[in-house]
Image (cartoon, rainbow, N blue to C red; front, side):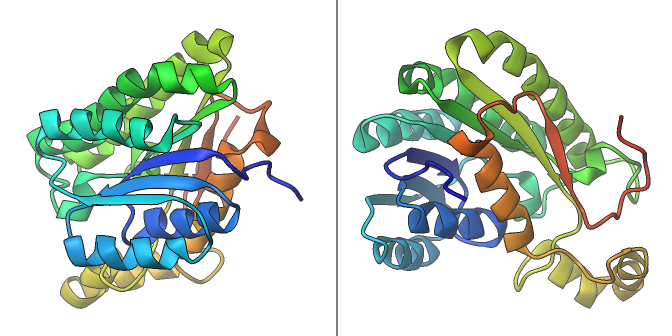
Length: 252
């Protein structure tokens, strides 16, 4: 199926590993020009080199998103260097910094990362005519998970924000959708650390997986890329749960 992504300009915050990296690989293979950042310069450089093999423009930068002013400046710079923005992916999260219990950090990265990204990129997305936004949430937002923590609550707020934004921006031809991954395992990710530090939780979570395995970054990235593409042009305001059946609620 043709996704209609060739030549699209994609901006993603966080992208040198995990779901973000998997999505960037697909976007590059589909012929998209890309701007992304991560905290680790070596990872950024390696990712840029890999993505450029697809013959697309790639702008990768290294900095700490904790600096809100620097993040906002980067968003504007990314859109200017790309010559616009067709797709914005809000992927960065306190979970990547092992800060899921830190309310201030989670609000800054997860919530305000989404808000600042949408506000600054709005004129570029509107000019695109096919603007698309993906806000990363989590199944921890839709069902009780482990214990009360900042990550769960803020990810729930992102779903509400995205749904309301989708209504406001529909007239501007900008689609807004949310993605809720379940437990996703990859080397260096949270679940690899949980496997080492809390093996009982890891084993119990795996046992609760109807499909018998943790998700891989590609499982989420493929659906996320489709949802952001022109092939999904009639989908907006949707919260897509990608969890291998892990959550038990019925979705109406």
